[in-house]
Image (cartoon, rainbow, N blue to C red; front, side):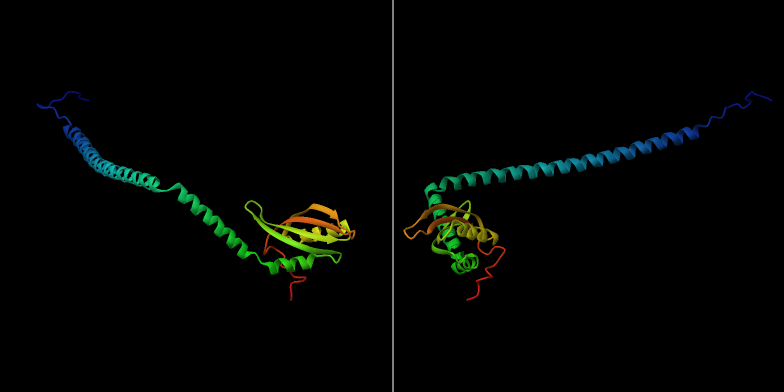
Length: 195
């Protein structure tokens, strides 16, 4: 086997190296084009965002200035007057919603024979709602307790309790009861509700 190269000019495989360098150059050029394109896109996006941010900041400044002018032009006394009038209107609406017929039907359905109602006074408490003060006359404490239990059983009256009890000249018990009343709640006045 002969290991000597007898050619006058030795053959080197330069084509493969040239193709490799050409492929690397194309790859570098493609990445460069992609990077330049991305830089241009991001630069445009950054410019648009900066313009939008500046516009939004200017609008926020204008709105803050407008709000400050409005706050300065509002009269606190006028707000207090409007607030009082609104509370008064709400109170009138609440009173208008209150149905005496429904209340009397519920009381008639729960009133024991030994108890007689002498007065009813509804008040509107902002925290508790409609609070009824009911004055009754009964023969015994048990009758008053039975009436309070019947009221509570309807679910329309909550937390009934006796505020004051005294015996009158005829020996009858006069009690002042208080209960929170919710009109239109679960049980309609069914027992004595028909005229």
